Image (cartoon, rainbow, N blue to C red; front, side, top):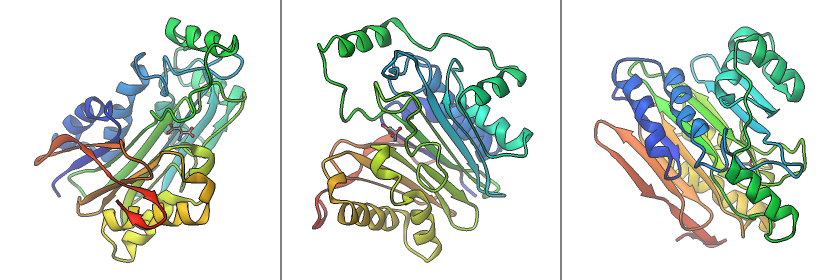
Length: 292
Ligand code: ASP
C-alpha cells in the first residue's frame, strides 16, 4: 500500500515530515501520527498546540489530545492536562498502558509523571503577554484562531491512525474541552473504512460527531472529499449558528485517497506521499447552498 499522511494547517507540512519518514521506512501509521504531531506540540510558535499554546482565563495552559488506532479501534485521550508538552504521547500511553480510554486534569498529569514524562512550564513569554493583554482588556479573545493539528495516516500495511492535539480556545474557562480529544468528533480511524480529523470551533464540531460520520460515509462508498462535503453541509444546515465559524475536516480512505473541506476560506491541508508534499487550500462553504 503506498503510504500517505495528511494534516491540518500550514504547520502540518513540517509535522508531516517525521511522520512520512516513519511511513516510508515501513513503520506504523500510529507511530507516524504521534511523532508527527509532536513537532507542532513542541513548537512555541504554534499558539494553539502544546508548549507555547495560549493559556486559559487563569493564565494556565491546558491541553487536550487523542489517538485512534484503526487496526483495533484503540482509543486513548487526555484533556485539561497541564505541564506536559507532548500530550499525544500521553494519550497513547493511556490507550496502551491502562484499562481506560480517557484521563483528565490532575489524574492525567499524575499518570503522565508515572510514565516518565517530564513536567514543564507550558506558558511562554508570548503566551503570557497575550493573556495579560486580554485580561487587561487591551485585546479580545481571538474568536476564530484555529491551530489544532489533526493528522491521519495510512501505512504500507494498510493500517490507518489518527491523532489530534490542541491547547483549545484561547483564554477559555478552566476545564473547557472542545472536540479535539473526543473520538468521533475530533478524530476517528477504522482500517475497514478510513480516517478523519477536525479542526475549528470545537463547541460546534462536537455536536455532529463529524469525524465518525465521515468514516461511515466512506464505508458506504463515498470518496473522502464527498464524505467531508456531506458532513460539513450537514453541520451548517443542522447548526446554523455554526456557520460564521471556521471548521474543517480532513479525510483519508483505506486506499490512500484524501479529501478536505472547511466552512470558510483559508483552510489548508498538508499532504505528504510519494506523489505529493504540499499545502492544499480546501474547498469551502460560505452558505448553505453548497460547496463554493
Ligand atoms: N478544535 C479545537 C478546540 O475546539 C480548536 C481548533 O481547532 O482551533 O479545542
